[in-house]
Length: 212
Image 1: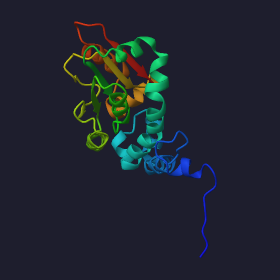
Image 2: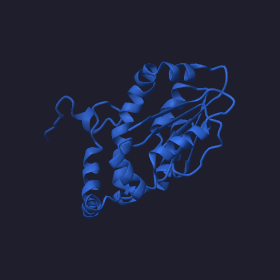
Image 3: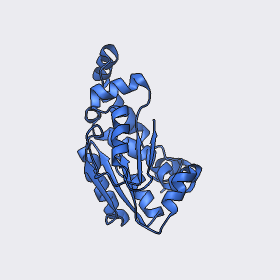
């Protein structure tokens, strides 16, 4: 019998799910995009959006697979230190710091934050029920389910109890994309920002970090 080995770099790119070079989510993302092509064509013509749920499980898995390596390898060690105020807030272990992760997906960012900062309490919110179910399972597997919770909530609706020190999320700040998101998914970035302000602890200084 013959034996074979892969070329250098193949394992990192296709097998190691947390390696920075991992691209295993790309085939799933392609499949998800093609699966809603008729709806996308109609959306471009009408200006409406395509609901996230229409993309199916492949989209959920693809997004998580493509984001997870960065969360594992860079979120706590590189990204947060570049925002000094946020870094100082999360590093303060003198009290429990509460963080809301809006649009948490499968929960990898919330999980990595909890692992890096043992005094954090993180609540993740997402509109996708399957994502939340899997996020809860991921948190349990990572051993942080006691400090990380996940709930199905639309970011355009009130959520949380107004006692967060940091509200983090990903929204579209581009007007065209915002209109599409509002029509197709019910998410208005301006409303999401206003709701985020309402989630902050009124008795302490708080922070909001949102990216597009």
